Length: 216
Length: 128
Image 1 (cartoon, helix red, strand yellow):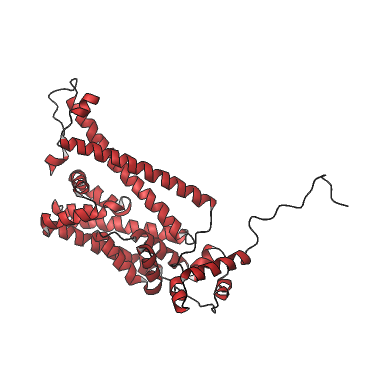
Image 2 (cartoon, chains in turn cyan, green):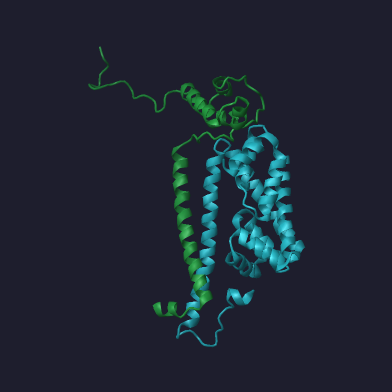
């Protein structure tokens, strides 16, 4: 039995606490089928088995509290804890990549990793804490992004309330495609700079942009 | 170009490697997304899974709930969120049995699909 099957079953039996706990744990960085659960909850609200507002409120609360635990871990847990977590979420490269990305556009990174680039969310939480990104700013972008994510997925679940599982799989693949695309674009741009910096016809006075390693 | 690739430092190699990986991942998920979207367009029913409740299945397959409840030997329950897995446990049998009975009930509750072809009309005129 898969984890998502199990959680969807318990969502039917226990309702809101399962939703809160799954989003909370998922946002800290433990892989959880949070998006699928949001879709299913949306479907249950459409069928009259759950109420819409409590679903939206509890889901957003779970996600926001989880994100802030991730931020706090990064900020006060130090490098060792984040190193351990980075191995859990996919390795140092992903952490460094997110950090370099964060250094330039932290607010946008927090906002977009809440609802569009969701697999990067836990890494962005940690690096926001690690790089000492202002907590009030983090909270504002976090709340905005999570509200959008929760509302978007619950509404999709309501709209496609008879095909939640397939919708979840489709959205999951779509999100990973976007993540891959963004990473490819960022790294492709970086590679282009390496090649330009090395070409003899490039102006010598132009200093190449700092690399990932030097930035950290 | 080849010369420039050879001159890369180790961390630049790493960036190149992750870049290639990201392109492969993007391609893989793009193909998968398109496949699922095509499937989505052509199929309306999603396979019955043990997490689904009887009411969810009835909604998904557009079959009245009482037909499904009857098929698995239960009286209809309003606001029943119990997943099939739970009902199967209460009935002491595997969820797959339950799913099979629901599938049979759905097939019998619906008009035949695809609809049968129109009556044979070879000469264009109505039969005498």
